[in-house]
Image 1 (cartoon, helix red, strand yellow):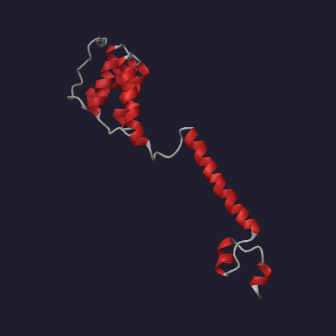
Image 2 (cartoon, one colour):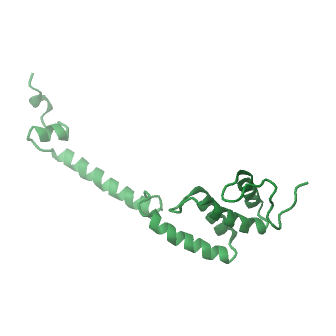
Image 3 (spheres, rainbow, N blue to C red):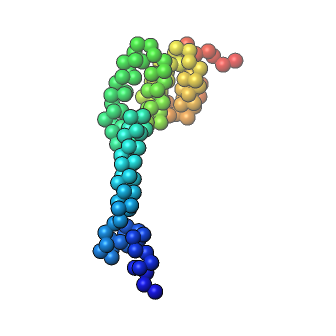
Length: 144
């Protein structure tokens, strides 16, 4: 049985190209449509900030500098973001426990309970600070 006659005009693009017939108009339309859809999706994700992390390291420096300025102005959210970025090594920032401890300590001194807890765990485990389960930042309440 001759498969060329049975599949004429309906062959997948790869088979049609291998047999020298080229792609049918419908297949070309589908290929163009899929490519345009992929471009539109990439643009949409890029605008939403969800694009792949191709440019994150360059943007990371800008973000860190902005957060440091905001933290210096008393923005607790910016200070927390800096602490977590350094603790986890996010947004193009290399993981640095001692730098994370410095930012958590700044928050802990402002009475932030989460930062006090995080800093306490860092002291208990010796992450970026000298291991000492009895160390408490200034201004934090003493345990009962």
